[in-house]
Image 1 (cartoon, rainbow, N blue to C red):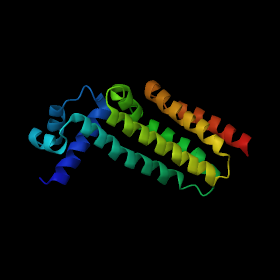
Image 2 (spheres, one colour):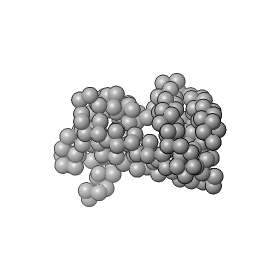
Image 3 (cartoon, rainbow, N blue to C red):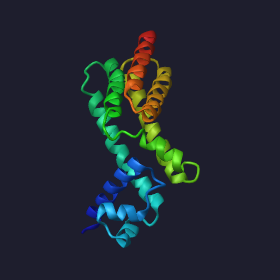
Image 4 (cartoon, one colour):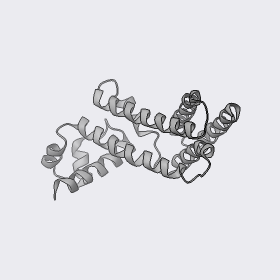
Length: 184
């Protein structure tokens, strides 16, 4: 098995296990068993578990932000794209394997002890905030709206992760709609 294939298999297993069970409860041997990549090869690819966690978050970030943008961009009205973010969150929260935000979960588990993990979480959250800012700008709304929209989305993620339901996205979307209307 070449390095690229082994890396993808290891990351696939890491994502499933870390997101489903939590990072600290999953050992490298669990990743080995789920991926089919030998422990020796796993440590050649990721000399420390922390590096595997960062790689998992980086890869998930690209996919997550891509899915969100593709969903929102289906809306032709720039103002509607802002609300589409919350529509997308509602769909994401309804997925069978939704276990909360992977970055918030990772920060909760490792952020105080792992600067590389904390940096990856901060980078993801900043990229999401920047994306919201681009939607606000495209809609011709004041930049000051970005922060409240970001907090609504983040709060919905935490609430949905704890409650296991999709209602937080609908509530956040209603609040976002009110904020957007008030700023027009």
